[in-house]
Structure formats: C-alpha cells, structure tokens
Amino acid sequence: MKNKILLSLSMFIVCVSAVKAEYTNGIFILNEDWFGHTSGSINYYNYDTEEVEYEVFKGANTEKYLGTTSQFAQLFGDKLYIVSKQNYGSNEFTGGRLIVADASTLTQLASLAELDGKDGRSFVGVDAKKGYVGTSGGIYVFDMENYKLGKCVESTSSTSGGLYSGQVGDMLRYCDGKVYAVVQNVGVVVINPATDCIENTIELPNVVSVFVTADGTLYASESGNNVYNFVKIDTSTLEIEKIDMPKGMSVQNQWGSWRSSSIACDINTNVVYFISSEYSKSISSYNFDTGELVEEFVTVPYGEKGEQMFYGTGLGIEPVTGQLVLTTTEAGYSTHFKRNWLHFVNVSTGDIENTVRLKDYYWFPAMLIFMNKKSDVSSIETIGSNSSKVEYFNLQGVKVDNPQNGVFVKKQGNKVQKVVL
Image (cartoon, rainbow, N blue to C red; front, side, top):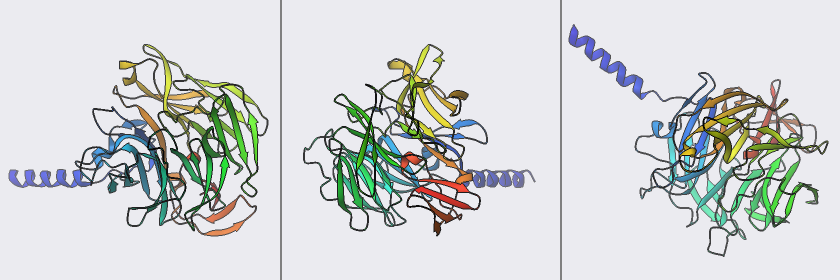
C-alpha cells in the first residue's frame, strides 16, 4: 500500500508540473535585464493575486532565453512578439532578436537570431499573415504564418552602417489600413501593406513617436535641436499641424539608446501622458481638446533611500480600465537600480492608488504589455461604420493591446469599437 501511495503521489507531481501557467489577467513587464550578465526577461503582475511572478518566460521554456536587451513587445492576436536589440548566445533556436510566443502561456514558437545583420527595435502586426519588424536600419516584412523574415521595405534601409542613424522606432497600423512608422532623422513613413512600399513620407527630422488619441486622431511628436512639439496628421491629405510646446515639454528623445516612446493615450479623453526627459521624476499630461499642459501630473514618491525615477518607456495605459501604470527605479546609479516599483494611477486625479515593490534585482524595465481577459475578442468581423475613423465589429475574440503599441479597441456592449488596428 505504501508503495502504491508513493507512486500515485509522484504521478500527481509530474502532472502538476506539466500544466502550463496562463497569463490572461495581468501585466507583462518586459525587462532589458542585467546587460552583460544575462538575457532579457519578463515579469508578470497578476491582477487576481496582486503579486508579481518573476522570469515567467524562462519558467515557461526550458533552456530558452530572450535576446540581449529586450526592449519591445507587442501583443497581436494570440501571440506575443518580443524584440531585443541583439541575440543572446549562439544557438539559433533561442535568445533571438525576434521571438514569437504564445501570449497566454509564453511558450516559445519561434526565435530569429538575425535580422539581416541589424539590431532589433520594434514590431507591428498588420493582419493574420503579415507583420513588420523595425530594426536599427530598415523595416522588414515578417511572415507570421511561417515565422520568416522577408524583404526590407524599399527606401527604409540605412546606408550609414551605424546603429544611431536611420533607426526605426515605433510603428502602428491605422484604421485606413496603412502602417505609420517613425524613422530617425526622416519623419513618419506611410507604408501600404498591400505592396510593402512607402507611399508617402511626412518629413519631421526631429521625430520621436507616433500615436493615436481616443478620438482616433493620428499624432507624432518631435523632440531635439530645440524643437518640442506635437504634430497632428490628417491621414487623408497628410497635411500637418504643429502644436508648439514649452522647451523640454515633449516626449523624450530616446534615439541615443533606443526605447519605445514614453507616451500613453487616455482611452476616454484626448489626453496623453508622457515623460519629457531621461530619468525624470514626474509625468506630464497634455489635453488636445483644451490645450492644457500639466507639467507635473504625477510625481513619483520617495523610495527607501531617496527619490524614484523613470527608466525605459516607464508608463502605459490599461486598455480596459484606463488606469495609468508606471515603472520606476530608485534615483541614482549603481546599486540604486536594483530597487524597482509598479505604481497604479487614477487618471482622473493623478493620485497613485496602489504601489507594488518588486524584489531587489537589476531588472531595468523596458515596457508594459497588458493582458486583460475582459478585453479578449477572437476574430473580428466588420458589421458597420459610423465615420471615417471608427468601425464596429462583432465581439468574438482577438486579444487587444495598448493603443501606443498599435491596437486600440473599446467594448461597446456586444460590439467592439476599433480606433486603431
């Protein structure tokens, strides 16, 4: 009897260990992690337990790793596309510059060690079959069915040979079907996914980001060379309207050590929240309807040994509740970086309503990716339109992501309102 009990217990343990965790109601925190020591990593804040689960990608994949300096990720459909600046190690099946994982279990589906000799930057999904990968020198077509890197979009390849000229930043697919991509020192290029060609270029040499407000309006931001503004883009005519901001009051310029732009769009009002400088200790807000700028909308609190500051992208909007979520590290250098926090902010008041301290380690947080089961829809079927910028879809099930990452859908009863997809 004793042997039978032990055998049954061991079988139970094996079965439990084989069950994959599901990440459907929380926030992925993508980390650069400790450069020179290990690969990038992903932590997960679980809304159900209100606790952080650590290094969940490594936990889901035996002897598999993210790339080096993981900087960007996009949730598209049921997959997570994770971009790192460089590959980690020499194994072509792991540690890639681009990794595709199942979004709910983080099981690795593909790993690309090389991106045509370029370093990884960003990603945007176009449809079920195609996406684009942004690199340090060009935008590449990505076959999402076979996980293959395709051709470089003509005229996007950098000829400088360096990492800091002609980089590709954030990209999004707008509801006109075109992809709008930020290219360093150039501006915003408009790509037609049907031909994989650039149709137009909006010349903005100090461009930093591209984003969409709650009413579906496309904007870019410029920062650098004493130019600080937001730029409204009419997607029908490509005419632009520049909104000058006070010196230093625009989205921080992060081309020198590229990161996804530090801006988040409110889901209910035409307000954006942004970080204007590296290692800032506050977040600004700007209302496009009223023109009101609040330079210190949120100021992060003190840590155990002093002030906190932002690192990486630093902020994101939860796409269903509209809550502003922040990642901070302790101000200073060296060992200060091992102390990190998550803050949850009420956008109506600017008050920090909840704070979670992460365990001590050099995470170097890159960006937030939101997984909220309330926002799941599975395939999207058009059922009507009420304007040139808003379409309605049957609610069936594709996971939706943060507006700054290229996908923004709002539930309207049993329908979904698409602003950007």
